[in-house]
Length: 459
Ligand SMILES: Cc1ncc(COP(=O)(O)O)c(C=O)c1O
Image (cartoon, rainbow, N blue to C red; front, side):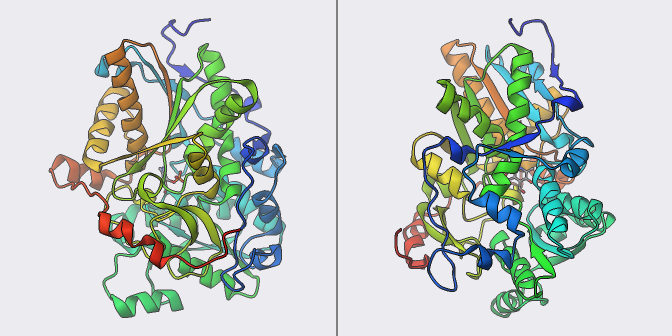
């Protein structure tokens, strides 16, 4: 079957929502590096992790099962917005004058505005099931905080969100969305925690960072005697597992389109939406001999995969979280104020880092002005205004489409449009006013990363 019948949207019914999550660790042949406890400097025990996470999520973190059943209660919630559409960007193709076929999976169709709800729902569910009363979390751009606020509301859990201060003031409407779903939202660093007070003592005007906000949310959960647990919106393996439903749906939708991707692209902050779309297709490479390429796109301001070290580091700024082996710019990294708030993180998902090191996934870094240029062209062609984070994927797809134009090849490109940008219009305003700056992370900073990393035995 050929895709040349002018069809644009490839839609599945509620019966096609995947009933199982996919776990790439069953097929990658890459044994996960141990996770190290910051307290003992030895591999962390499930009991230590249980202070922060319910046991079911800890078991998923280390699972080697290929498939994990999605609980019925979670399926009910997924039916509110899944399956999300797969759309052929015919007008964008035309604008680029490319012979490539460009498809995007539209995760901005979720009620909270991004893919983050895919993991917020099961995280809230497993917490409720384990008797958790309240959750804590951080948020950068506000997408994760909004998603977890909605999920906690649906499962009747309280939620405290520590929002990176710069975003808190730039994006009041994200905060109001979280409050509408019943969460409490605080600018981070805040005076509510020891971690926040320590940072404020050094710099009362600190703009915050994801790493600092994580320290605050982890501290509150760790000191709650088990009443509160912490939820992370990316990086951890269980989050990547939950996001696999994106790629599982996309495989069925590409089947409807009668095509198969030559290349799959996504933006990367902590790696979860990219993993979500890519890993099920990567399974098809590993198990069924497909030859798809995978391209992770990061900002030049936070180039963790392309220029960071692959080493053990903390997940947060203060050094309270477990130490994991990942691509890192150092946990004390303070990001440049680029508008893709969700990509301003020092580390990368260990699972994705290992796949990059093994050469199974490629990575590129792009400066923000050309990222917005691509996003605006996409918006004007397809009518969807992407989140600044997602614009990195749009630009990645555009680069591949222009290469196809030059070589005259009819390449099939699939990218994940991880969220809409309706709360990010200030970033677009800055772009139109020529007020966006490109940032390249300085070489001197790269050369000092190693000195700041925790010392652990290399297991
Ligand atoms: C819309 C959107 N896309 C992408 C990301 C990056 O996160 P991840 O790499 O985990 O998908 C974020 C993070 O906040 C986001 O809000």
